[in-house]
Image (cartoon, rainbow, N blue to C red; front, side, top):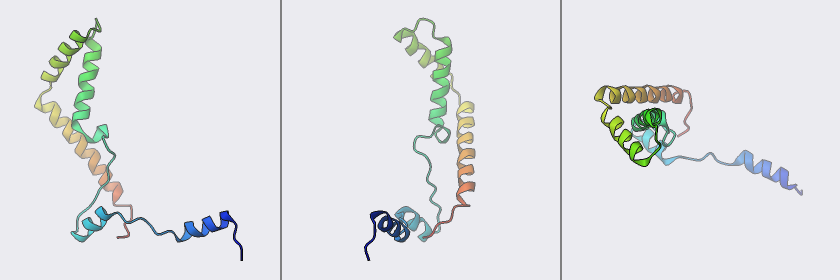
Length: 111
């Protein structure tokens, strides 16, 4: 029996084993969760949120567009960030992370 390339590809696709992620296997072995988060996602990194706020404030106040003024404004706004703002950003990241965990519970893992 001769198969066409398309038919052969379909048979291969049906019998292809699912990839096994060793991180998930190891996590399951020790009764832990492995949550895969997007790399450098701003809502999951407090420093990204802080940096965005600094850049926004610098852009609002920058009138001469000189490097010296940008540097001075950047230093000023970095110094103005207090622990309350950091705490707010960290809490937001934890909230988003928890939302990812909630969704991940609905995704089956065959480990």
